[in-house]
Structures are given as C-alpha cells and as structure tokens.
Image (cartoon, helix red, strand yellow):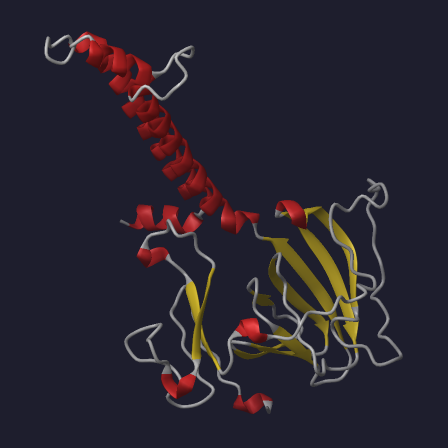
Length: 300
C-alpha cells in the first residue's frame, strides 16, 4: 500500500471505525447474531468491567475466521531478547551510554532484530517495564508478532516503519511514536529499507489493577455476609466469636420481640459498617488507579 493511500483518524478518546471492505461493519450494534459478510465478531477490551459505560474502552473486530482457529504456536529461540526478573547480572550504578547498534548484514526482520538493553520488574507479576532496541533490514514475511504482557511503544530512530495491525496500517517515521495495545497482532514492514529504533514494553498491571481490586472488594463483603449467615443458622464454629453467632443468640433470646435493640444492633451495625467500608475503599482506590474515572468525576 503506497503511503499516499493511508488516511488516519485523529483524536484522543474518540470512537474510531474502519473497514477493509464496504459493509463489513454492522450498523447500530456491535455483536449481531449474524455479522455482515459472514464475519465473526470478537471483542478486545482494555477497561475493567467496573468502569462506567461512558468511560469504557473496547475494540470490536470482525474476522473472516475466528482467532482461535490459528495453527499451534512455535517457540521462538528468543535471540537477544530478555525478560524479567532481570537478575542475570548486578545492575551497575554508573551512567552508561552506547553507540547506535549496527544494522545487520544478513536479512533480519523486526523480531530477529530485537535486543534488550534494560528492564525492571517481572512479566509474571505483571509489574515493570522492558526497554529494547531493534535493528532490521527486512520486512516480516509469513509471521506476525503480538505482546501478551502489555502494550508496546515503538520509537523509530532511523528509517520509516510500516506497521500492519489487525485494526489498520500506520507508518511511523523518526520523530514519531506508535503505541500498540496488548494482544493486537501486527507485522513490521520497512519501506525505506534498513530501520532502527527503540521498543518499550510496559506490563499490564496498571490496567488490570482496578479489576483485581474490584474482585477483592467484592469478595471480602461476600465472605463476611456468608460467614454471618452460616453462623446465624447454627452452621458456624461455636468456639469462635462471630457477628452471626451474636445475632443467633439474640434471636433465640427473643431480643427482637422484647425490643432489646442493644442486643442485636451492635452486631448488625458492625456488619453494615465493614461491608460499606470495603465497598467505599475499593471505589476510591479504583479512581486512584484508573485516571479516567477520576477525570470523569472531576468533570461532572
């Protein structure tokens, strides 16, 4: 595809739509029972399910074949790419500089030309970042690349790179950057021949932290209510103090009919306060970890 044929959609936080064939996108709905042209609807989402609908970010794709029908993956030798925990050698405290890495003399594409120069954290814990450089002189042929750990920031230093993704094609020249979301498959072509630049890979914990926190803040109140219910029904451990056990004793003593509120109110109020505290704490931490929710609240 010539560079003159590329048309970009601009803006941040906007809704974008593009189609390779006219009529491929459904009108008025994301996942109809029968997608146009016999395509398969699949969704990629980078927002936690607790995010308000207005702040939710999602990507719908319509494929000729479902993505799960791919052939078995084949392990790549890795070359000079390294991952966490980056403990192969002690980290020197000195400032370091290096000259630009040489362009390979043999045919080398983007994947084979990747080299790790720095990193922190560990992909297994979904915390950290890795910095790579790439030096390539050939376009990717017959294979594609995607990052399962987090998004990729690509910064060319020499030569243009044309990145063909599942969502479209983008050309990146020196002085420009390109961010590819987690899970998006792509290949790198080199319209100017040899190319060199930086690749920064950020793990996805900041994106999934609201989701993890939401599960925790939901699980704790549910656990408290479950234990209280079982103890109230007499199915708990009688040797351990429990709000449910207190309510059971108050009920058996006829505290409700005698209006002895001091017998059952402290336990009931304690349950309500703890459950409410966890819910409010989870909501506050979610806004801290997800700037979009905080900005939406401030704009109201």
